Image (cartoon, rainbow, N blue to C red; front, side, top):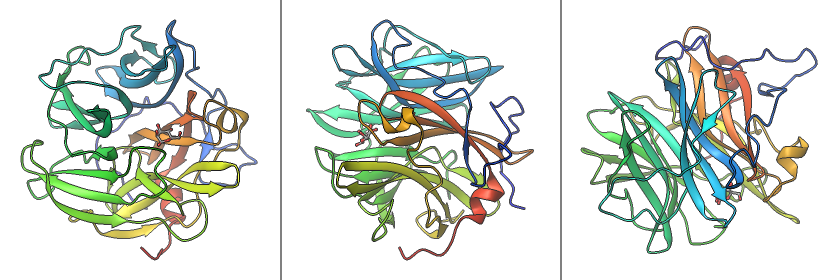
Length: 323
Ligand code: BMA
């Protein structure tokens, strides 16, 4: 049995696997847990990130407003299912512009939380970075990289003294390619030592591009990285997700990954929406005592769902996959 390294989270949202369900990941029966129009001003609320916070949970939510601007909003919850999301977007304290924000991730490192997101830089996408200690005040820092980049995801501790971030160099549109890269920084400002982590796999659900999803989970078998993979169908892009194990000491090394997806668009709220056929994971809550993992994912660029699974079942799906 593999073990999650980290704190217990006994109050994470959870439902046991349905009796007739044979796959390693299953959905909350109340999905979608956040609807597209939960805010007065929201066209859609999807690809969003949550963390344990005080006696409940906090998060940063992607809310596209009814002018179709991409905004980030803070939110709080006692149970991880029912969320009070601020009506107003986060006002970052910053010397550099916040142009737009989407696909946030939130990572706790030591005494604070860091938000990474796709930030506009002169209109082009790159990785924005901010810190908070209370989810009320957010101090925006320098963008991590040059455009074009997306899916910036921090590791939850320094590795050999360095902060580590995954990202996905891309282009300016619905990028038709994409590999996961890793970069290191001594101070969260200057990034280097760039390494390729993994590439798409010929044919199938992860053949067009891949991108890191939630903050990697530390386990005694390696870092568990849940990531999205994209297939180009006759009807456009299809977003599913799978997982990989990365070396604990050097996470640019892939140990194994899932040849099959863990979850793909299947339910109506995943198949039909502003962008159909998308499941896009941005956060997990995990309980080190039991190996339970709750995965928060955007559904069809419209709303938010949760899926559940056990660490061992996810690892059992992994194989040696040519990188
Ligand atoms: C990606 C990102 C995501 C989105 C996905 C599917 O490029 O923009 O926010 O969920 O496309 O539209």
